[in-house]
Image 1 (cartoon, helix red, strand yellow):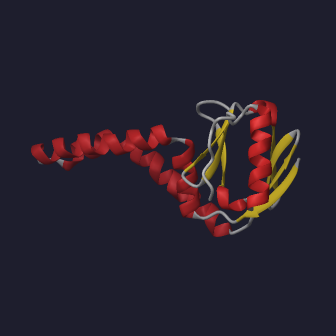
Image 2: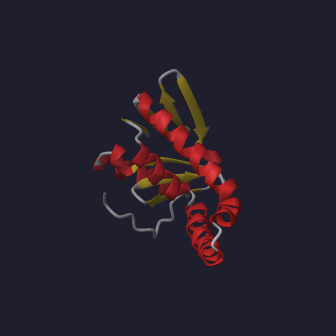
Length: 156
């Protein structure tokens, strides 16, 4: 198998990819704020809620800044997939992961999520592959055991 494609990163795509790869973090964030903010409203002190949320808000702010910085570069990310590895290239940077390092694959929130561990995953948008490439990619993932054979994959 040899597939190659490219896409331009955007802030929206980065947020969608993060949501697809780490839904638990998003759930914690969504559940955390409603619990702390009503308490502070009843108490009448907004600083209580913000003090509890400070570490989480700091991570979100820094992540947002990094995503904005990367999206302003507007350089395309190129993906090359062979029988042995998955390679990402952007400008003068390159990273490669062998398929044996991946534990599972899944399609979620408009992205392919290739998971190495519960905390480590790489994603790319499903629209980056045309229908023929998608069929080849799905067959390859099933042959590797990364995508269960009985899993139905919705069309883009």
